[in-house]
Each structure stands twice: as structure tokens, then as C-alpha cells.
Image (cartoon, rainbow, N blue to C red; front, side):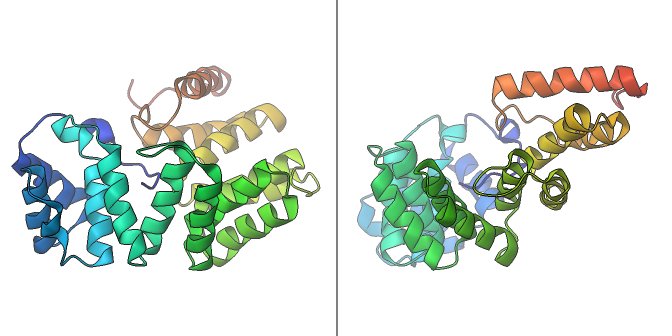
Length: 262
């Protein structure tokens, strides 16, 4: 359930159980035992076939089922939530965070932000950096700037999390969360995140250089990085994507640079 640059549109949309297993092997690298259990469950076997899986294997299987809709056209987040919960009960920290995320989003379970917070806290204290970011966002939404800044900074600087760096960059750019506005610190954080292929940080760099610093060459440099990621329609909301594409078109006029695809 992590954000990345994988192009989901390139995955097969319809297929057999064998196609499903082949795809999840490529994406999640489950072991042979997990393969067998997944195949049995997809074919309708009782859940008891998973009794001997480790928490890590259960979580990997949950990830596979969460994304299975792209192959077998069966959106069943409840099933994914069930297996994530099993893995979380066994102590897998990524599964614990995933359960919190599903509670936060009402995905496969009724939305409950306070239950989500419990899972975020548990995963964050266990060292799950993405859970630290989500816990920070929880505190941010509840006007607790001190706790928000603590967890997001911890994720950024102790665990090198690119989403945390990008969010801290936002704080410095806007002067939020009790921080003084500092555009240079914001840019440094965005650039660190962009070096980790964080596309949101790249978008932020395009906009900062274009709108605030009027450095169109630098903005175009980052625009070309953004374009190098290929099709991001599955990750970026349409309105944001339309806006950034309009800015890139303007930047091409201002800098005289042509698209590499022309």
C-alpha cells in the first residue's frame, strides 16, 4: 500500500489465477508457500489453509489481494483487511500501519479515525516511518502542531522518509506547524525527497521555481524529471495533473525547450 512509481496501468487487467500469481510474484515476491495458499484461496479454499503462514507472509498475501482487482476484476478490500488484520495480530509492523490506513480511509472497513490513530501509534513506535507520517498528519488535523512536527521530523531525519521530507518542505514553504517561513529550507527538503523519486516533491519544486522564484530554467529541469516518470494518472488527481501539465507547457514556451517525445 505504499506510494511508488510503478505504473499500474501496465498490469494485466484480466487474467487467470496463474496470471494473478505471476503478477503478485513480480510485485511482492511472496515465497512458494504463500503462492500455494493464495492460489487455494482464490480458488475458493477455506481460510484455514493459511494457518501456517508467518505474519510477514500473511501481510504479503494481504498486499497481493489488495491489488488483485487489477487482474481478476474482483475488488474485495474486506478480504484484504481481514488478512492485514491477521498479520497485524502477529506483529508485522507494515500490516499494523496498513490496518490503520484502511480504518482512516474507510477501505474494507467502516471509517474510524480514532481506531486508525491507535494503529498508527503502534506502528510508529515500532519504527514504521510511513506510520509516523500518518500519525503526524492526524495530529496536524487535530491542531497539535508539536506532536505533528515531532513525528514527521522523526520520520524525515531518522528514517529518511521522502513523504515526511516533502511535508516538512510544505511547512517551511508556508510557515506552518509552528515553523517560520523559509523557502531555502523548503527547497532543500523537496530536493532531498525528489532525489528519492518522490513525485510530489518534484511537483512542488516545479511550482516553487516557477511561481515564487521565477527561475524558469530550474523549473523546467524539474519538469523534465516529472515527465521522465511516465504516466502518473493512477497516482496524481486529474486537477493537479492538468495544472502541472499547463505549467510545463508554459515553461516550454518560456525556455524554448521542446519535449523529448517530439
